[in-house]
Image 1 (spheres, each protein chain N blue to C red):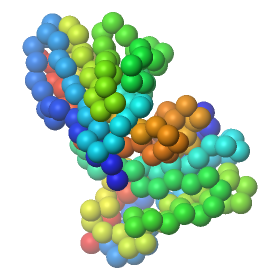
Image 2: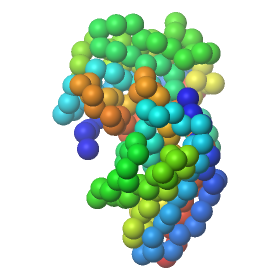
Image 3: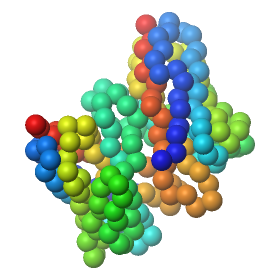
Image 4: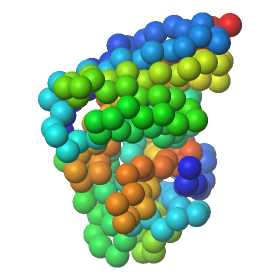
Length: 116
Length: 109
């Protein structure tokens, strides 16, 4: 299957700082990327959908000013957690889907964010 | 989105086939059934998907009932590395994947 790479895989930051997570599709052009969050012992929760060159669409209850998503190219989307707080500590996962009728979405390996 | 129902957990013996059931009684005619799995602390891995017909690939087989209200994922020869949480998802037309609780599969030697 196609490869989606996330960076970093782990990050620890201080409360009040911002953290950027990158999601790259390595061998295909991703017209759509999705961002998920997963708390311990819970399932993945969709945060937002981003299409290349347009504004992200956020799920209900997700603060768009806190979780900034940029999908500037067909191979890169970034999620910036602004003014992070300990409750933002979670496992953040992106997925990417190639356009042109492709059905499968492929996932990155995830980023473990710890806010101290 | 159509909801899915899966058993919370199941055990399987190494080398035997693992049959994972999923109910999706409210599925619409143009909605696909997807299966992903997530090994601890990793991103989900795509397994297989289908619409009406049974599907098979190098990882698994997907059997969809004729009325499409349920399906079964079959891992033909389970190994210890197949221990994971398996998610059955009905994919909406907007390509969003909504994850439920899944089935925690434990393969035992």
